[in-house]
Image 1: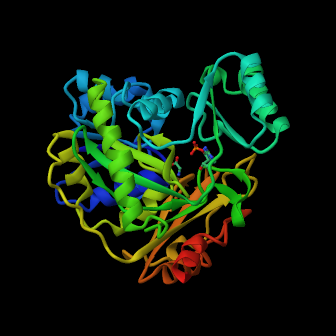
Image 2: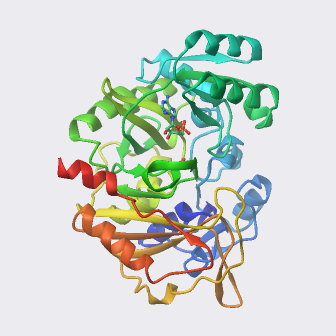
Length: 426
Ligand code: AMP
Ligand code: GLY
């Protein structure tokens, strides 16, 4: 079957890499793809959010299945458009995508269906929001309602920070329409984990747990990024925590979305914090995580394409995914300066020295191939990924691979997976 994968990051490289291993897969296209994806799929000069051009291509090439990586085309309704033309596509509808594209919507669903999350208030009025934080006198989290490419959340310990965050969103409109409304919520404390499931609207397959590292520097210092590395499994997600997350968070959300008349088909990602009162939802995403996917898929023994097709065809019931019991670590190498301004077009050396066995994979994110050479083209450049018999050996393997690779101003965190080591040591 002919497959089109939409997106250009490390997540999409991992998706194409895994889908290509399926006996069901025929020719794979990726729009727009990157320098690594180009090795295993045909990349197209179509932006991930150019829904009309993607539709034209899928219709003219008779694509059998489209798999959408990023949230922007989902929130813009790519699934509804493709389905209205009779095309098979994996992802939630525009209305179901509101679980990610509107934090107010997501919070109200959680409230209605009694899904554990932090207490919150919603505001559109600047003065009301300022009055609220002045009276609250405690740490709070201020969130813009709409999509902000991961930048719309401010964890604020002081009143000054809270007022600044509110002013920047509601008055200065730094996020434009995405910041027309805000959520002000209680600040939770605890380790974080990502629980990602595939749903057909009724049934779910829960993927292996993982943990992201959002801050740029070691020990979670510095500004937030798209994600500097991930590992799977996340030992903070004990069997007991997972059961609770499934029964109190995942299943009621899927059932709730169905009873709202907007069933959720596709990937649901719950970002959770394991608090002293149990796991609570920080956010929902309606797509695979990046870089979590790079650490999860190398552990998946089952056929991802088969799982996706069963989701699209609403036949997930009873499906059990098989997992490699080993650990997987993905360390993201970025271009110096990221998440601020960074250099591009730098030659990446050492890629040929990675032997490319199944246990060591270099997923590409911001790369492009020019005249046979791989150059940097984005902030997050590569996701160096290895399996290991335990988390310690997965970490060691990954950093050993990283030693072989370099490009001008390359930067990466040196502590990816360290938290899991701490938990194991307990
Ligand atoms: P989000 O994009 O909503 O996941 O938020 C980005 C990051 O902000 C999360 O990974 C957490 O580290 C932090 N965060 C979000 N909500 C809260 C909260 N209610 N309490 C504490 N930290 C939070
Ligand atoms: N790793 C965080 C995200 O995909 O949003």
